[in-house]
Length: 336
Image (tube, rainbow, N blue to C red):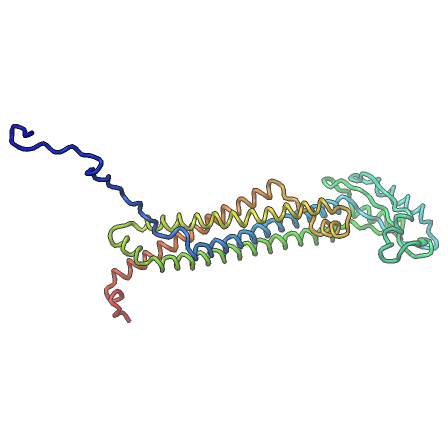
């Protein structure tokens, strides 16, 4: 049927002649989300995160052990009395104990009897010793107040005056050595962490430049048509942030699992020579909530350093592209 103008009305659309709606294709990322370089970099970051967390945990354990040793040593002093034919040893031990306890800052005193002294010498001289037949010094152990120690100089002088065979050892030499060892261990650990982070930054720089080299033409075209350098840097930043988070999380979780397994082994092998020796040297392998917080912080720091390094590298590369473009002599290859 025709309308008043003489034209035929448009035929109604059916399913056969209806055109499909226009669909926009999602834009792909500038940097491929998964490639060989990205997987290799993820493995490297995981290894470095594992080493960093292990180093951090090791430093914490050594510091805690050194602090425990220092606290145990600084709580006690030792009075040593050498044997002498003209000396009544038992009377001298009791007198030395009373002299020490007369000073403010001392708490209690214990005289090492012959059986305890023989047990101390068993690893070197064996069992069945007769202490009276050997010129073995006898010991008096005095417990002191760490916060308010006694006057060691006055105590040492009085002991020397009343018992010439007695010597006082306040263990200050051992304490100083332990403090020095703890500081040295912390310095070494901080140095190792610095080396790990430096190697990681250099690795990310080379990986970012490799990714830029593979996508240099895309970056150059986008930049020439008006894309801001910050936009391109953000794309690379997102790419390397995902890689660094995955790698650092894997390495940190592996380090946390290692500490958990070591602590479980130590708890299951108590009172064995291996466990006792490990405990004496390194303390307990258990990591408290502060240790796990340090592992998490290390993971975040690694991810942040990786992302920041990638961004700076991309921005510097774009700056070099702009500098070459603005220099006709360099852009046409006639420079130099």
